[in-house]
Image 1 (cartoon, rainbow, N blue to C red):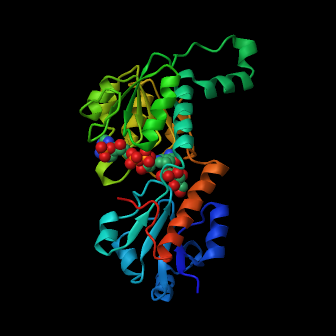
Image 2 (image 1 turned 180 degrees about the vertical axis):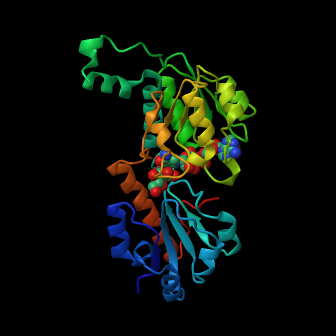
Image 3 (image 1 turned 135 degrees about the horizontal axis):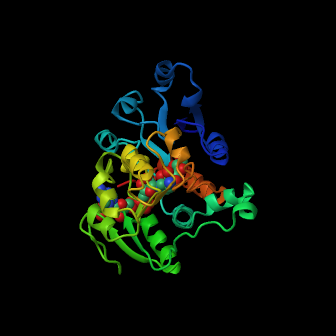
Length: 312
Ligand code: NAP
Ligand code: 8YV
């Protein structure tokens, strides 16, 4: 008998196929009546494979009294209430490390694009303006600038390595100081004050909500750039919009937003923002590695073994 699990959303195609061949899967996202769906599967479902922002809280866990494991596709588990899971003895797993390189590549792409305005300069060429108006205006170099990393964890460290190879200096702020060769700042305002580019790569959730606010952006200043590859919730989006519109900061590179996939349309008009649709880990190779780890955690658990990547 294959263990029964629920798939919360339409995830990565290869992973969905693998999950469906190896477990008995029920698709929450296809159920017209969610209440009836949970009632139907309450007595038999032992696992949840989660994808995306659907909140997994105590109420949902209580609707599945046989639930043993929540296996998330992605490293960020801000949609899962970890306290509620702990109280109920439910294991939560995620997919760390396998996506560090791709996310760090994306972070550096955002730094280069925000500073050098490469997307805007390409549009300039495509509009025929190079030939008619002359050279694209000068931008600013990444080399020699200071990158302040807010959240120097697994991905933050991969970003730091890459940024150094571009000639950038690194500083950071975490809640706890680490044994790393980079200068530490005691809070996000101090970090922003010492940085030309502030890179946000903390987890999302209540603990970091609007950590980047007006005070932090004031400290970053009119020559400073913000890059966010963490979660939209970590930045006060309305304040950021205003600061970009009023040129109170120089520019931004964003991969994540408060209410995805909705992005306030006022962002579309900004010439000083580079906007990606949450694609930092979105390569065939990395998404496969994430899915394989999600499936492996389920297999290990149902075989009675310790999971590979439990969330602390
Ligand atoms: P990680 O290894 O846990 O690193 C997170 C870092 O943030 C830690 O160094 C932690 O240090 C720091 N931190 C946590 N809370 C903080 C706070 N309140 N103030 C300052 N620093 C804080 O996680 P990771 O694997 O690098 O992933 C980081 C996040 O990136 C994920 O949680 C996810 O939200 C996001 N992400 C986004 C994408 C994307 O597609 N855009 C892809 C992958 C991940 P302390 O505990 O010492 O504070
Ligand atoms: C994915 C992510 O886009 O790992 C994360 O935390 O944000 C990304 O890798 C997301 O998990 C896909 O659902």
